[in-house]
Image 1 (cartoon, protein in one colour):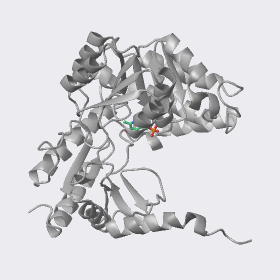
Image 2 (tube, helix red, strand yellow; image 1 turned 90 degrees about the horizontal axis):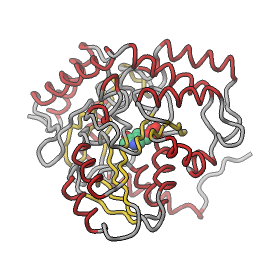
Image 3 (cartoon, protein in one colour; image 1 turned 60 degrees about the vertical axis):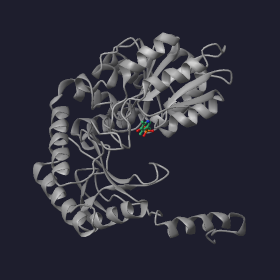
Length: 404
Ligand SMILES: *Cc1c(COP(=O)(O)O)cnc(C)c1O
Protein backbone atom coordinates (compact mmCIF):
# COMPACT_ATOMS: atom_id res chain seq x y z
CA UNK A 1 0.00 0.00 0.00
CA UNK A 2 1.20 3.48 -0.81
CA UNK A 3 0.11 6.65 0.89
CA UNK A 4 -1.38 9.14 -1.55
CA UNK A 5 0.62 12.34 -1.65
CA UNK A 6 -0.30 15.44 -3.60
CA UNK A 7 -0.86 14.68 -7.27
CA UNK A 8 -0.63 17.44 -9.94
CA UNK A 9 -4.42 17.91 -9.79
CA UNK A 10 -4.07 19.46 -6.32
CA UNK A 11 -0.67 21.12 -6.63
CA UNK A 12 -2.34 24.56 -6.64
CA UNK A 13 -3.17 23.94 -2.97
CA UNK A 14 0.52 23.43 -2.18
CA UNK A 15 1.25 26.73 -3.96
CA UNK A 16 -1.30 28.52 -1.79
CA UNK A 17 0.14 26.99 1.36
CA UNK A 18 3.55 28.29 0.33
CA UNK A 19 2.06 31.77 -0.01
CA UNK A 20 0.77 31.54 3.58
CA UNK A 21 4.24 30.48 4.70
CA UNK A 22 5.76 33.51 2.98
CA UNK A 23 3.22 35.81 4.67
CA UNK A 24 4.00 34.31 8.08
CA UNK A 25 0.41 33.24 8.73
CA UNK A 26 0.82 29.51 8.08
CA UNK A 27 0.21 27.46 11.23
CA UNK A 28 0.47 23.93 12.49
CA UNK A 29 -2.21 22.47 14.74
CA UNK A 30 -1.25 22.43 18.39
CA UNK A 31 -2.08 19.06 19.89
CA UNK A 32 -3.47 18.75 23.42
CA UNK A 33 -2.15 15.70 25.22
CA UNK A 34 -4.23 15.81 28.40
CA UNK A 35 -7.43 17.54 29.48
CA UNK A 36 -8.74 20.96 28.46
CA UNK A 37 -7.66 22.73 31.68
CA UNK A 38 -6.17 26.12 32.72
CA UNK A 39 -2.76 24.41 32.71
CA UNK A 40 -2.33 21.61 30.20
CA UNK A 41 0.12 20.01 27.79
CA UNK A 42 0.25 20.97 24.11
CA UNK A 43 2.92 19.41 21.86
CA UNK A 44 4.75 18.06 24.91
CA UNK A 45 4.91 21.47 26.62
CA UNK A 46 3.08 22.43 29.80
CA UNK A 47 1.42 25.82 29.30
CA UNK A 48 -1.05 28.19 30.91
CA UNK A 49 -4.05 28.00 28.62
CA UNK A 50 -5.51 31.38 27.61
CA UNK A 51 -7.10 30.05 24.44
CA UNK A 52 -10.01 27.80 25.26
CA UNK A 53 -13.75 28.52 25.33
CA UNK A 54 -14.11 26.31 28.38
CA UNK A 55 -15.34 29.34 30.37
CA UNK A 56 -16.65 27.45 33.37
CA UNK A 57 -14.26 24.51 33.44
CA UNK A 58 -17.11 22.12 32.62
CA UNK A 59 -15.18 19.99 30.09
CA UNK A 60 -13.76 17.99 33.01
CA UNK A 61 -16.49 18.45 35.63
CA UNK A 62 -17.03 15.16 37.53
CA UNK A 63 -20.82 15.38 37.30
CA UNK A 64 -20.73 15.85 33.52
CA UNK A 65 -18.17 13.09 33.07
CA UNK A 66 -20.32 10.70 35.11
CA UNK A 67 -23.46 11.66 33.15
CA UNK A 68 -21.68 10.84 29.88
CA UNK A 69 -20.45 7.49 31.19
CA UNK A 70 -23.83 6.50 32.58
CA UNK A 71 -25.63 7.39 29.34
CA UNK A 72 -23.06 5.40 27.37
CA UNK A 73 -23.60 2.36 29.60
CA UNK A 74 -27.37 2.66 29.32
CA UNK A 75 -27.86 3.72 25.70
CA UNK A 76 -24.64 2.97 23.83
CA UNK A 77 -22.34 5.29 21.92
CA UNK A 78 -24.42 6.45 18.95
CA UNK A 79 -27.95 7.50 18.00
CA UNK A 80 -27.96 5.48 14.78
CA UNK A 81 -29.85 7.87 12.53
CA UNK A 82 -30.88 11.45 11.81
CA UNK A 83 -33.53 12.88 14.10
CA UNK A 84 -36.38 12.55 11.58
CA UNK A 85 -35.73 8.86 10.79
CA UNK A 86 -34.95 6.89 13.97
CA UNK A 87 -32.37 9.05 15.74
CA UNK A 88 -34.55 10.96 18.22
CA UNK A 89 -33.84 9.47 21.64
CA UNK A 90 -35.73 10.30 24.81
CA UNK A 91 -32.58 11.96 26.16
CA UNK A 92 -32.50 14.37 23.18
CA UNK A 93 -36.04 15.47 24.01
CA UNK A 94 -35.15 15.81 27.69
CA UNK A 95 -32.25 18.11 26.84
CA UNK A 96 -34.43 20.28 24.60
CA UNK A 97 -37.11 20.58 27.27
CA UNK A 98 -34.46 21.45 29.82
CA UNK A 99 -33.02 24.24 27.64
CA UNK A 100 -36.48 25.63 26.78
CA UNK A 101 -37.34 25.86 30.50
CA UNK A 102 -33.95 27.41 31.28
CA UNK A 103 -34.40 30.07 28.59
CA UNK A 104 -38.10 30.56 29.37
CA UNK A 105 -39.28 29.93 25.81
CA UNK A 106 -41.89 27.59 24.31
CA UNK A 107 -39.52 25.23 22.59
CA UNK A 108 -35.95 24.34 21.65
CA UNK A 109 -34.22 22.21 19.04
CA UNK A 110 -30.64 20.99 19.35
CA UNK A 111 -28.29 20.77 16.36
CA UNK A 112 -24.94 18.99 16.02
CA UNK A 113 -23.09 22.29 16.55
CA UNK A 114 -23.64 26.00 16.89
CA UNK A 115 -22.42 26.33 13.33
CA UNK A 116 -25.11 23.92 12.12
CA UNK A 117 -27.76 25.71 14.21
CA UNK A 118 -27.03 29.11 12.63
CA UNK A 119 -26.45 27.96 9.08
CA UNK A 120 -29.39 25.53 9.20
CA UNK A 121 -31.84 28.01 10.69
CA UNK A 122 -31.10 31.13 8.63
CA UNK A 123 -31.19 29.13 5.40
CA UNK A 124 -34.45 27.39 6.40
CA UNK A 125 -36.53 30.37 7.47
CA UNK A 126 -35.64 32.73 4.57
CA UNK A 127 -35.70 32.48 0.80
CA UNK A 128 -34.39 34.41 -2.19
CA UNK A 129 -37.06 37.11 -2.07
CA UNK A 130 -36.10 38.01 1.54
CA UNK A 131 -33.56 40.35 3.20
CA UNK A 132 -30.99 39.76 5.93
CA UNK A 133 -29.71 42.79 7.84
CA UNK A 134 -26.50 41.62 9.48
CA UNK A 135 -23.77 43.17 11.70
CA UNK A 136 -20.48 43.34 9.78
CA UNK A 137 -18.72 41.26 12.45
CA UNK A 138 -21.30 38.46 12.71
CA UNK A 139 -19.98 34.90 12.89
CA UNK A 140 -19.08 32.91 9.77
CA UNK A 141 -21.93 30.45 10.38
CA UNK A 142 -24.47 33.30 10.07
CA UNK A 143 -22.82 34.47 6.86
CA UNK A 144 -22.89 30.95 5.42
CA UNK A 145 -26.55 30.51 6.42
CA UNK A 146 -27.37 33.84 4.80
CA UNK A 147 -25.65 32.81 1.57
CA UNK A 148 -27.39 29.42 1.54
CA UNK A 149 -30.77 31.10 1.95
CA UNK A 150 -30.11 33.16 -1.23
CA UNK A 151 -31.74 36.13 0.51
CA UNK A 152 -30.24 39.58 -0.15
CA UNK A 153 -27.68 40.51 2.51
CA UNK A 154 -27.44 44.08 3.81
CA UNK A 155 -24.53 44.58 6.19
CA UNK A 156 -24.65 47.26 8.90
CA UNK A 157 -21.67 48.83 10.66
CA UNK A 158 -20.60 47.03 13.79
CA UNK A 159 -23.00 47.67 16.69
CA UNK A 160 -24.65 50.55 14.84
CA UNK A 161 -28.47 50.37 15.25
CA UNK A 162 -28.93 53.61 13.30
CA UNK A 163 -27.20 52.06 10.30
CA UNK A 164 -29.25 48.88 10.75
CA UNK A 165 -32.35 51.08 10.62
CA UNK A 166 -31.09 52.82 7.47
CA UNK A 167 -30.60 49.44 5.81
CA UNK A 168 -34.06 48.25 6.88
CA UNK A 169 -35.67 51.50 5.73
CA UNK A 170 -34.06 51.11 2.30
CA UNK A 171 -36.02 47.90 1.66
CA UNK A 172 -39.16 48.54 3.67
CA UNK A 173 -41.38 48.76 0.57
CA UNK A 174 -40.03 45.56 -0.93
CA UNK A 175 -42.23 42.50 -0.47
CA UNK A 176 -39.73 40.07 1.12
CA UNK A 177 -39.37 39.27 4.82
CA UNK A 178 -36.64 41.02 6.81
CA UNK A 179 -34.36 39.36 9.36
CA UNK A 180 -32.23 41.50 11.69
CA UNK A 181 -29.38 39.43 13.09
CA UNK A 182 -26.52 40.02 15.53
CA UNK A 183 -24.07 38.09 17.66
CA UNK A 184 -24.84 38.49 21.38
CA UNK A 185 -21.11 38.56 22.16
CA UNK A 186 -18.61 39.09 19.32
CA UNK A 187 -15.96 36.42 19.37
CA UNK A 188 -12.92 38.43 18.26
CA UNK A 189 -13.36 41.61 20.33
CA UNK A 190 -15.45 40.38 23.25
CA UNK A 191 -17.95 43.24 22.99
CA UNK A 192 -21.72 42.87 23.40
CA UNK A 193 -24.36 43.48 20.71
CA UNK A 194 -26.74 46.43 21.42
CA UNK A 195 -29.84 44.25 21.76
CA UNK A 196 -32.38 46.73 23.16
CA UNK A 197 -31.78 49.26 20.35
CA UNK A 198 -31.74 46.54 17.69
CA UNK A 199 -35.02 45.10 19.05
CA UNK A 200 -36.54 48.60 18.79
CA UNK A 201 -35.46 48.85 15.15
CA UNK A 202 -36.70 45.33 14.33
CA UNK A 203 -40.08 46.06 15.91
CA UNK A 204 -40.42 49.40 14.12
CA UNK A 205 -40.03 47.66 10.73
CA UNK A 206 -41.71 44.35 11.59
CA UNK A 207 -38.45 42.45 11.08
CA UNK A 208 -37.67 39.03 12.56
CA UNK A 209 -35.10 39.44 15.37
CA UNK A 210 -32.36 36.80 15.76
CA UNK A 211 -29.43 36.65 18.21
CA UNK A 212 -26.48 34.25 18.15
CA UNK A 213 -25.47 33.85 21.79
CA UNK A 214 -22.61 31.35 21.40
CA UNK A 215 -20.14 33.27 23.60
CA UNK A 216 -22.86 34.52 25.96
CA UNK A 217 -24.32 31.10 26.84
CA UNK A 218 -23.20 30.29 30.38
CA UNK A 219 -21.42 33.64 30.65
CA UNK A 220 -23.94 36.53 30.66
CA UNK A 221 -27.38 36.88 32.25
CA UNK A 222 -28.79 35.18 35.33
CA UNK A 223 -27.18 31.71 35.69
CA UNK A 224 -25.69 32.21 32.21
CA UNK A 225 -28.99 32.63 30.37
CA UNK A 226 -27.32 34.88 27.78
CA UNK A 227 -27.70 38.40 26.41
CA UNK A 228 -31.51 38.28 26.14
CA UNK A 229 -31.59 37.88 29.92
CA UNK A 230 -28.67 40.29 30.46
CA UNK A 231 -30.60 43.08 28.71
CA UNK A 232 -34.03 41.85 29.80
CA UNK A 233 -35.39 41.75 26.26
CA UNK A 234 -37.40 38.58 26.92
CA UNK A 235 -40.16 38.09 24.35
CA UNK A 236 -38.57 40.50 21.85
CA UNK A 237 -36.16 38.08 20.13
CA UNK A 238 -37.82 35.58 17.78
CA UNK A 239 -34.86 33.27 17.27
CA UNK A 240 -32.22 32.68 19.95
CA UNK A 241 -29.21 30.55 19.08
CA UNK A 242 -26.82 29.17 21.69
CA UNK A 243 -23.96 26.72 21.75
CA UNK A 244 -23.27 23.67 23.89
CA UNK A 245 -19.64 23.64 22.76
CA UNK A 246 -18.21 26.55 24.76
CA UNK A 247 -19.21 27.26 28.38
CA UNK A 248 -21.46 24.17 28.44
CA UNK A 249 -18.32 22.13 27.84
CA UNK A 250 -19.48 19.49 25.35
CA UNK A 251 -20.72 19.89 21.75
CA UNK A 252 -23.80 21.16 19.99
CA UNK A 253 -25.92 24.18 19.21
CA UNK A 254 -29.53 25.03 19.87
CA UNK A 255 -32.33 27.26 18.68
CA UNK A 256 -34.95 28.57 21.10
CA UNK A 257 -38.23 30.21 20.17
CA UNK A 258 -41.90 29.52 19.56
CA UNK A 259 -43.23 25.97 19.20
CA UNK A 260 -44.03 26.61 15.53
CA UNK A 261 -40.52 27.90 14.78
CA UNK A 262 -39.06 24.71 16.24
CA UNK A 263 -41.52 22.43 14.44
CA UNK A 264 -40.79 24.23 11.19
CA UNK A 265 -37.07 23.60 11.71
CA UNK A 266 -37.83 19.87 12.25
CA UNK A 267 -39.27 19.92 8.71
CA UNK A 268 -36.88 22.24 6.91
CA UNK A 269 -33.49 22.70 8.63
CA UNK A 270 -31.07 20.70 6.53
CA UNK A 271 -28.51 19.73 9.23
CA UNK A 272 -31.43 18.44 11.31
CA UNK A 273 -32.85 16.43 8.40
CA UNK A 274 -29.63 15.17 6.82
CA UNK A 275 -27.05 14.70 9.57
CA UNK A 276 -27.08 12.23 12.47
CA UNK A 277 -28.03 13.40 15.96
CA UNK A 278 -25.74 13.53 18.98
CA UNK A 279 -24.60 10.41 20.80
CA UNK A 280 -26.67 10.00 24.01
CA UNK A 281 -23.55 10.78 26.08
CA UNK A 282 -23.43 14.32 24.67
CA UNK A 283 -27.10 14.96 25.45
CA UNK A 284 -26.65 13.62 28.99
CA UNK A 285 -23.53 15.76 29.51
CA UNK A 286 -25.39 18.89 28.47
CA UNK A 287 -28.34 18.16 30.77
CA UNK A 288 -25.88 17.86 33.65
CA UNK A 289 -24.21 21.13 32.59
CA UNK A 290 -27.49 23.07 32.78
CA UNK A 291 -28.02 21.59 36.27
CA UNK A 292 -24.61 22.95 37.27
CA UNK A 293 -25.53 26.40 35.90
CA UNK A 294 -28.76 26.35 37.90
CA UNK A 295 -27.22 25.07 41.11
CA UNK A 296 -23.74 26.62 41.12
CA UNK A 297 -23.87 30.20 39.82
CA UNK A 298 -20.67 30.82 41.84
CA UNK A 299 -18.76 29.41 38.87
CA UNK A 300 -19.97 32.30 36.75
CA UNK A 301 -19.04 34.76 39.52
CA UNK A 302 -15.50 33.31 39.58
CA UNK A 303 -15.31 33.73 35.82
CA UNK A 304 -16.18 37.42 36.10
CA UNK A 305 -13.84 37.99 39.03
CA UNK A 306 -10.94 36.51 37.05
CA UNK A 307 -12.01 38.51 34.00
CA UNK A 308 -12.00 41.83 35.85
CA UNK A 309 -8.59 41.13 37.40
CA UNK A 310 -6.97 39.99 34.15
CA UNK A 311 -8.29 42.92 32.08
CA UNK A 312 -7.24 45.46 34.71
CA UNK A 313 -3.70 44.03 34.85
CA UNK A 314 -3.32 43.82 31.04
CA UNK A 315 -4.31 47.49 30.81
CA UNK A 316 -1.91 48.43 33.61
CA UNK A 317 0.95 46.70 31.78
CA UNK A 318 0.25 48.95 28.79
CA UNK A 319 -1.17 46.42 26.32
CA UNK A 320 -3.67 47.63 23.73
CA UNK A 321 -6.76 45.68 24.76
CA UNK A 322 -9.14 47.55 22.44
CA UNK A 323 -11.31 50.59 22.95
CA UNK A 324 -9.51 53.02 20.62
CA UNK A 325 -10.42 52.35 16.96
CA UNK A 326 -11.45 48.85 18.05
CA UNK A 327 -14.41 47.79 20.15
CA UNK A 328 -13.77 47.57 23.89
CA UNK A 329 -14.22 44.09 25.33
CA UNK A 330 -16.92 43.70 27.98
CA UNK A 331 -16.60 39.94 28.47
CA UNK A 332 -14.02 37.25 29.35
CA UNK A 333 -12.65 37.52 25.79
CA UNK A 334 -9.82 40.08 25.85
CA UNK A 335 -7.85 40.79 22.67
CA UNK A 336 -4.26 42.02 22.88
CA UNK A 337 -3.98 44.01 19.67
CA UNK A 338 -0.50 44.16 18.13
CA UNK A 339 -1.20 45.31 14.55
CA UNK A 340 0.59 43.29 11.91
CA UNK A 341 -0.34 39.63 11.29
CA UNK A 342 3.22 38.37 11.27
CA UNK A 343 3.94 40.06 14.62
CA UNK A 344 0.82 38.55 16.22
CA UNK A 345 1.82 35.06 15.06
CA UNK A 346 5.39 35.58 16.30
CA UNK A 347 4.14 36.89 19.65
CA UNK A 348 1.95 33.80 20.01
CA UNK A 349 4.88 31.47 19.20
CA UNK A 350 7.23 33.25 21.65
CA UNK A 351 4.60 33.13 24.39
CA UNK A 352 4.19 29.42 23.81
CA UNK A 353 7.94 28.86 24.21
CA UNK A 354 7.68 30.69 27.53
CA UNK A 355 4.71 28.61 28.70
CA UNK A 356 1.59 30.60 27.73
CA UNK A 357 -0.92 29.56 25.07
CA UNK A 358 -2.64 32.56 23.43
CA UNK A 359 -4.09 32.29 19.93
CA UNK A 360 -2.65 34.59 17.24
CA UNK A 361 -5.42 35.90 14.99
CA UNK A 362 -4.79 37.77 11.75
CA UNK A 363 -6.54 38.88 8.56
CA UNK A 364 -9.04 37.76 7.24
CA UNK A 365 -10.49 36.72 10.63
CA UNK A 366 -9.89 40.28 11.90
CA UNK A 367 -9.29 43.45 9.82
CA UNK A 368 -5.85 44.11 8.32
CA UNK A 369 -3.69 45.98 10.88
CA UNK A 370 -5.73 44.69 13.84
CA UNK A 371 -4.00 41.33 14.32
CA UNK A 372 -3.98 40.15 17.89
CA UNK A 373 -3.53 37.55 20.55
CA UNK A 374 -6.96 36.61 21.78
CA UNK A 375 -7.10 35.68 25.46
CA UNK A 376 -10.04 33.99 27.12
CA UNK A 377 -10.46 33.84 30.88
CA UNK A 378 -12.08 30.94 32.69
CA UNK A 379 -13.59 30.39 36.13
CA UNK A 380 -10.97 27.79 36.97
CA UNK A 381 -7.74 29.75 36.42
CA UNK A 382 -6.06 30.29 39.81
CA UNK A 383 -4.69 33.64 40.86
CA UNK A 384 -1.19 32.20 40.76
CA UNK A 385 -1.65 31.03 37.16
CA UNK A 386 -2.91 34.46 36.15
CA UNK A 387 0.03 36.24 37.81
CA UNK A 388 2.43 33.93 36.01
CA UNK A 389 0.69 34.45 32.66
CA UNK A 390 0.79 38.24 33.13
CA UNK A 391 4.47 38.18 34.04
CA UNK A 392 5.21 36.16 30.87
CA UNK A 393 3.08 38.43 28.69
CA UNK A 394 4.95 41.47 30.02
CA UNK A 395 8.40 39.91 29.60
CA UNK A 396 7.81 38.64 26.05
CA UNK A 397 5.84 41.80 25.11
CA UNK A 398 8.80 43.98 26.18
CA UNK A 399 11.34 41.84 24.35
CA UNK A 400 9.29 42.12 21.13
CA UNK A 401 8.60 45.84 21.50
CA UNK A 402 4.85 45.35 21.95
CA UNK A 403 4.83 47.13 25.30
CA UNK A 404 7.45 49.45 26.74
C1 LIG B 1 -18.27 29.36 18.24
C2 LIG B 1 -19.36 30.12 17.61
C3 LIG B 1 -20.34 29.47 16.87
C4 LIG B 1 -20.25 28.00 16.55
O1 LIG B 1 -20.50 27.20 17.65
P1 LIG B 1 -20.01 25.66 17.63
O2 LIG B 1 -20.91 25.01 18.61
O3 LIG B 1 -18.58 25.67 18.01
O4 LIG B 1 -20.22 25.17 16.24
C5 LIG B 1 -21.40 30.22 16.38
N1 LIG B 1 -21.48 31.55 16.60
C6 LIG B 1 -20.53 32.23 17.29
C7 LIG B 1 -20.67 33.68 17.52
C8 LIG B 1 -19.44 31.53 17.82
O5 LIG B 1 -18.50 32.19 18.49
